[in-house]
Length: 539
Image (tube, one colour):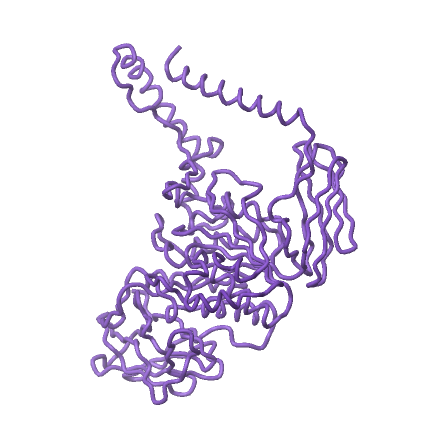
């Protein structure tokens, strides 16, 4: 037998032998009814939406779920999976029991509340724990909120969708919040302080992860611009045209390799490397070996959550969004949002994201640009996706800090939720560029979200933004047709900012805070929210 076929036969024999053994064990004992870790003690059920409850039992077994006066019944499939749906529930801070009964067992989930569930996901922007946040001793000591519940999904990559994860709900307390996501906690705390309804916070974040790992496979097919990653993913499937071509090429390589391998084996020489079919990297999380593979964090950390009703998503890709193999962050963001919304089947739930923080040293070069500045510019296009919002945090969030301010970041994201999802009369954003008008040697910049008016502001630590009387807006740059940027004089005039430079008599374009580290930018609205960076050029 050729060496290639021998190896394949041995692999199949071992694999199917183990599966037969495991299958025998599964058949020999009746399976107790089981729930995923999402339904551990302390869970928050999403209010005012149909709420799925699911799990596993013996095939064909009748399963009954009882909660809040409702009783619903389902039948386990041939694979042992079952799912039922509770009718929409009103918010309730009263701890109750959720009971799941099958013929041979009963599971009781205790201390169940009904409120709003928010999924917080991304990389270090969410992953950063409370013990590393600014003022953490005082913040942790004060984190006594029994109606806020915390769930951290274990960091896990997979090449196929998983049905469960490691992690349990915890009641928010000084003891449980220590290693919780700082961004999630401060976001949830701000909501609870305004709404006084139970808040469930699911932290599904993975440090250093890029966005392409979080997108559903279908998400790559929803966005035309994601052609390269889509073709890469299709190459793993021999039933697709791209995959058939890739596998045909692999088979040709194998046919060339076989005689060389047999000859080397007979001559007791090292056997050349065996060609392998196209496939994703094996999901190995140690040393981040498979980090960045397409959809592997979606499969490992988001897929197990998707039947669970949620209110919305907080997303922070604060540090690893720039290292894309195919550089188009906005298209990836659309793939993420559209794919998740379609997978959940709950309509266009809100997605609020954090703009990239500052990095490196402050530059004195007008309109300096840089990789992070350009990525922010592309990231901001996410606001064109329906029902999204963006929190600017470069004035309070530093990529290189070991003592990060997640308080302002969480509270600014919460303002978007309070204004958009909960319809409270509150300004949710700092000034966003709307348009420019050139008049002679100066440019008039108009904004959306000016709130109670524009101002020059200063942010010192965790203290509220303060107005700088007689302050001058900084970090504006202007250029003419020669595309050379010069520091601009800027002045707040009513609801606009007027920009000019003696060195640019015929201005064409303006940039504001367009640098990798724009933390010394100082344009705010009087609601204490910073203006987003912008450029009016497309150079």
